[in-house]
Image 1 (cartoon, rainbow, N blue to C red):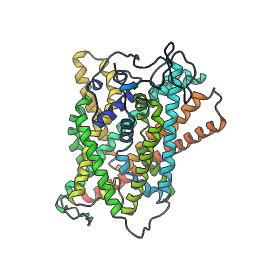
Image 2 (cartoon, rainbow, N blue to C red):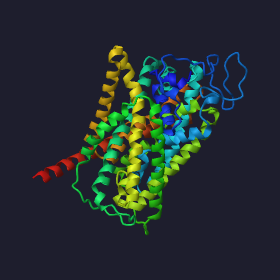
Image 3 (cartoon, rainbow, N blue to C red):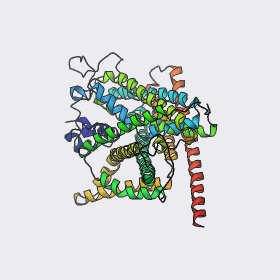
Image 4 (cartoon, helix red, strand yellow):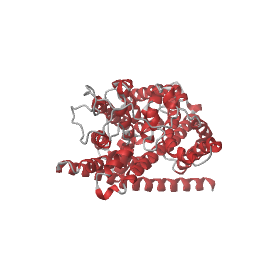
Length: 508
């Protein structure tokens, strides 16, 4: 029986398993049996680690007591798991989304030189933290005799290593799952704003759309409706989408959406590279007060740490996962720096929350916006699936079988409605991205992994410089968390006030 399928029914593994299923659904390779529910937990697919008290060395394979020494390091994936190439594809998709399109504005907030350098530094630190999480999970899984640990489980068992934290270890898993829920539902809020902004622009400029892509006109030729009305328009369609509770039915649509987003990105890169203005007169460093907005957007884009453990555990040969991680995240970091830089250079101070909103009003790039919007629409259901698998089963378990389906659907409607309401309250794409990144992504990607290494290895001759390094990374993440959240909320209040005053003047 597939361990990932079984983990979906367990609260302790639901987040990580859900993200792995999302990756498989996105690639169009989700097997039907993985999308169905199971009720029993069985670890027979993985070796027993209970006979070992220490973590394996880098070159030492894990083997179960009484069994021949294995020649390969296999935990859950085994020979039926994901290949090297498939894992890279899943990792890329787990990190590339709307955050990529917001990076040109992030570079503007940091500056033409400071922005790309900061993205490079943040990419290096993010990859390092992902690697820390994998190493800690390996060590703790061996120690606890379990073949698989989710992110929350790793934090919980890590806290059990510290006497004064062991009594509260359960809260470690709860806090991680809370941030994962905030992240996933935050993604859904961003998707509402992204869909409304891009479709609104296509509709309102339809009469001005031409076949000439060299003249970037901005005239609005039809009456302008508030973007929040477009969110309400999308609401019933998204509710219908999340009623699809089996991911196997979304797999074909996800594959098409994936192709649509890839084509859109290629065309966006082509336009930016062929329309670089000369000379380039842009500030090399942005205002210090805007840097927290850069931090929030950048860490939002890099927040793929939730898919790391499921992907590593599902590989045919998890020993090769570090190579997958470095190669995949190297590609991601290169994409982020390149698009962020050339996007800012191409559009300068006029860059908007998503670079798609700056594209010319010709039919080619209007189609690009619609294609990417379709991809985001389908991705909403995939991101929503993770939170649904955490929040819905406990509620359904408290009611009888007669009401189970009704309760399930009602909770789905309520969660979609919540993300829509939050998007309506904050209809600013760049600020929603920055806020979500600052609040949850910084905690998951920067603050928690270094602290997890400290509590996992603190009694095993941990070197002082390693501890100082971990504390430094966590402090950077904490400062970004506080400053990014504060500045984002401050900007949200200011823009909402300006929007309200503008609406009031129009009514007068």
